Every structure is written in C-alpha cells, then in structure tokens.
Image (cartoon, helix red, strand yellow):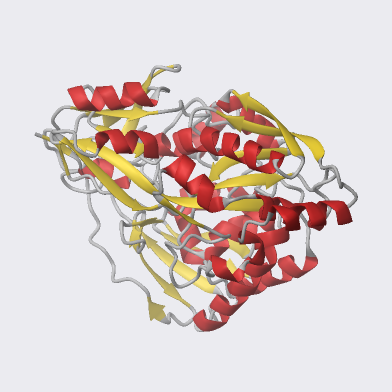
Length: 499
C-alpha cells in the first residue's frame, strides 16, 4: 500500500501525569443511565456517563471537527480502501492493562457480531476487515470507498475483552475504559459517581477528582439546585426551565443549535401506517410552528431529516410541501387511503425529557383535528427503550441524536434492516440513495444525493421530523472550562475546574 494523504499530523504521545485534582463536580441529569455498554446503549442518559469512561479512535470538538483520541494519525491509500492508524502510546485501561491495537480489533468485531445486537453495526457495513498490523497500529480495509468512515470512528468505542468475558459478554453493569474518569459507585435512580483516572493520557486532565451525576427527574428541582449551588452543571435544560434561568445571578445559560431532533415515529409494519398517504397526511396535520411555540418557547426551528446545524447538507424545509400545515389536505389523503373518519392508534412516549412529553401532548391535539385519535402511553424510560428496540409500538414520540455526517443520521435509521430502523421501513430507492451517499466521495455529489434523500423521506418516510431546538446548558460561576457540543457529548467535562 502506498501511504497517501496524511490526514492529521501525529499528535504527541501522552503518558499519565501525576497532579492534584480538586473537588467533586456535581452534574444534574433527568434520567438514570439505561445500561453502560457503549456498543449497545442508545439513550442520551447512558452516553452522558460512559462518554467519560471510554474513548474511541477519534472524537469531535465543539466546532464539529474530528480530533485524535486513541488514534494519533492515519494514512489512506490512493484508492481510498485502506486506512492505517497509529495508536497512542502509554494508554492504560482502568484495570491497569496497557491498551493496544488488538483492543481496537476486538471492539470492532464485537460491534459487528450479530449476537451483540449493536446499533452501531450499520455504521461499519462497508468495512471488510480490521487487523492489528503492529502493537500500536491497526489497518482497516474497506469494500468500497466510504465517505463517512472517519466520522463513524467516533462511535468505535474501545473496550477490554477480558472485562466483557468476565461479565458474561455484557457491559451493561460494569465499565472499564481508557477515559478520563473511572466508574466508582452507582446508587440506582439516585446518582452515578465517577473518579478521576490517575493514568489518563492527557497531561493535566481531568481537573476534578470526581464527577457525580445526580438523577433528578423534576426540572424544577434541577433548577433550584443550580440556583443554590447544589449542582454545578445541568447539561440539558428544557426550554421552559431555560426561561427561568436566563437572569439568575451566579448562573450562566449557554446555548447552541442542537443536532438532535424531536420526532413522531411510525411503525410501517402496522396499518394504517403502511400506507404512505397516511404518513403524508400526518405531516400535513402537524403544525410545526405551533409546536415550536408551545414546546420550545420559540427556541427551535422546523427541521427535516437533517439538522440546520449541518448547514452544508440540510435541505430547506420550504422544499417539503407537507410542512405547510393543511388539515384539509390531511383529511383528503386520509379519505383516499380509506380512512375518511380517521382512526385510533397508540402513541408511546416517556416523561423524563420535557420537550418529548410536551410534544406528545401537542401532537395528540393536532392530529385529533383530522380524526386521528392517539391513545398516549407515558412509559417508564427503560420500558420505552425496550419497546422501541422491539418495534412494539404504533407510533412514538422521542428525541433522536445527531451526527456530524448525514450518513450518521440517515443510514442506520432508514436503510432496510438498519440497526436503528425500528420502523420496519423499506424503500429500494432510499436504500440505493443511502448506499450512494456513503460510497460517493465527491462532496458536491454527496450533497445532491442527500438532498434527494431528504425530499423523499420528509413527507412519506416513517418519521415525522418536528423540530431542532436550542440545546441549553446551565453552569454556575464556580465552573470554568466547560464547552457545549451540538452532539450533546460531554467530552469537555475533563477540562472543567472548580473555583
């Protein structure tokens, strides 16, 4: 192989540096983690915690640029099929074992093993093999050029084989990574306590001795706690609470365009949602502007399949005819599909994220105007996740995570058999466009492909995209060094100091 483009100048190999971390950072979150296995979980509440414990080969900064993590540099062959990564020296897992290329290969193979059931698997379908070509070198060979490959490597979380095997193949209750913090204690539904990793490979980090994630379901209690200094950070503040914290002395309210979106998901394996006319009718029945005012207090934008935060990629919603709220058109489409009087269906949701529960109520009222009566089931979050995984719903309202590349939003969600295609959706034309989108390397051509995809999915796909809000975070004046990520990641906790 000829080493072609050096995509990143090799970073300095760090070794752990002894220093005195100070204090415990108190973080308030709304929901307890639903498991700790980074290859299996999908919940934001889980990633908020395990993102401090584990590393991937690469990570994303606040500007959505890729940076080195466990990889320091890489080269790509001229044909775009072979990637060779140099790995960081001196890294240890929390159990003291040195990290090596074999751990990367094992983690990749675990994700791709169907028995794991990893929702990350679809991100790596175009990878033919991963091989340790040195103690600190790993080589990935692709079947075809794969444009989002580097972006997707942020999701290749590296885990130690011996810990997986010692726990019956599951990491849901244990966590041993290479990250800045180590799992110290879990008190169910109360808090998760992490301790600083003394061998962390970035010198001078983390800067606090402990991070405690306090599980505080009530938004008013979280807000009261940050006012009094009980909590230092609320990473995700709902819009209603954000209004109350705007002018609180000693508290800074931060905001960034969220890459995540609220959605109404439809199970197309069940009537009447198997009829694209019904799906289109639902979109016409939704008044997104009304929803944004009611749920987000105006702090959101109507959004299609891609976030406006991806300015180079997102198609303007004015190109989606069904986004112009039109109840008469909705009734007409329902009549054509054989439902002139509407229909009844179930709507599954959960109550721990305010914008989700509020959106469910607004949608219930809006769809009732055209005869669609939704019986709302507000499930416990763990039960919601299980039902979602099993496609055990008619419809659901939730919040979906974003990505820095369109493939991360769209492929695993909409491709036939995709690892998060819980909608049972299958469209050969969509499959073809998705495959072209990830195997075409010319930027302009990819933009055109994803424009076509967005237009095909927006009105008759299995998701009614609702809105992309402002992601608010609240921090007290005792905190320095915290930055928001549009992805909702919390990588910057390792840089936080307490005054």
